[in-house]
Image (tube, rainbow, N blue to C red; front, side, top):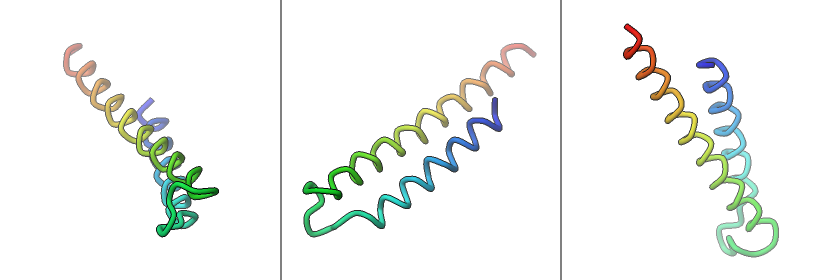
Length: 65
């Protein structure tokens, strides 16, 4: 499960980085830039959720011991 979370974090980070390059900073909420902004926000949400998942797994391991 830890490996899955780390792989998902890497994929989400790569997706966010890719969409940063597609972003038009002059008009970020028009056309393809709007899709890029939404994709960046979604990728960052995945990273946060995977961090929460890893933290909960660490807590679960400590509570079993």
